[in-house]
Length: 471
Image (tube, rainbow, N blue to C red; front, top):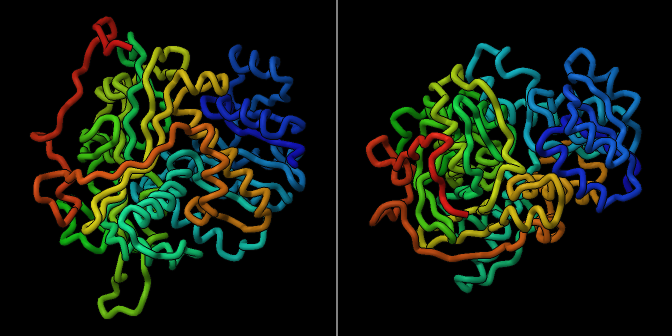
C-alpha cells in the first residue's frame, strides 16, 4: 500500500505515469513538483485533485522543498532532467522514503568541462560507488524506465526463450553469475536494444524546432554525448575512434564522436533490417557488466562479456529535427516540442536483439501502437506508456523488496516485473531470426554493424509542409 507519491518533473513522463499510478494505488495522495506549472499542467492538476508545487529543484533547495513531502513509505519519482539522482536518493533514504527514476542524472551537464564526466559510464560508476554501504537502506531503483529499465528484464526473458528454442536443458539462473554463465553457454556475442519508432506527426517539426516523443532536452543531450557501448570479449580490436576508460569496471568503451553521428545496422520483426543511431544509454553498460563472467585470468580480462548497445531509429519528425544539431552543440535549435496529441498513427517497436555465434538470434519485445496506448491511459503515446508502465512495475517490485539499497534494473526478478508490465506493453512477442549485419559476418564483431557515411541511409530533411507517410 502506498499513501504518498511525489513526482519531481511533471512533463511528458510525469503526466504519462499519473493515470497508471492512480489505477494501481487509487488511495495514494500525489504531489507534483515542476519548475513550470503552465496552463496545461494546471488543468491536469485540477482535474486529478493533485497537490502542486512550482519550484526548480536545485542542489541548494531540494531538501527545503522536498523535506515536508517525504516520510517513511513515500515514493519519490525523479522524472526531471538535471536533478541529481544521488542527492535525491540520499535525502529520500534518510527520510525512510523510496526512490525511482528513469535515468541517472547530474545537477548540470553543461557545468562540467570534462567530457568524460558527462558520460553514462561515469554517471553509473559514481552511482555504484555511492551505493556501497547502503545495501540495507530503503530501496532506490535507478534508471528504470523502458530503456534503460525494462529492457534488462527482457534480456533475461530472451535468454530463456533461446534456451527453449535450441532445446538445451539448462536451469533458470538464480543470480548474476548464473545469468552470465547462461549467456556464455548460448554464445551470446551481441545484445542490441533495438527500437524503431514509426509514430507519425505530419507537419512537424517546424523550422528550427526539435520534435520528439519524449524529452527533447534529454534526447538532444544524448545525441551530443559520445557514443557508448558495452564491450564484448569476442571483439578483435577497438574501432578506429574507440577508447577505453581508465577507471571503473572496464565493461564499456566510447567512441570519440557523438551518437547522432554514429550509425549501426539493426533488425526488428516488423521492419526487418534498418539503420539506427548508436545513442549512449545506461543499459548498454549495466547489461554488459551484469553478464560479465568473472574468474581467474592471466590477461586481466574477463573470460566472457557480450557487446551491448542501443540502436535507435526515432520518428521521422525527430530525425528531421536532428539536422539542427552540430557535432557537440545545438545552437540552431530554436524551440522544442514533445509530440503527443500531434501523433496520428504508428507504433513504437522496442525490444532486445540477442545474437549468438552458434544459435542464431532472438528478438523479444513490444509493438505498441499509439492508438492502443491512448485507449489504455490518457496523456500517453506508445513511447511514454512503455516508460510509465515500467516505472510502475518497478515500484511494485520495490514494495516486495523494501530494503535493498540502490538497485539497477538488471538485478530485478524478471518474471514478476515482466508480468506487471506486460498488459501495457502488449503485444509482446518473441521472434527467432538468422539475420546477419553483413553476409558472412559470423564473428559478429562490432565493425560488422558499424556504418560509415557512405553506407548509411540518410533521412531526407523534408519541410513541414511536404507529404509524409500515410497513416
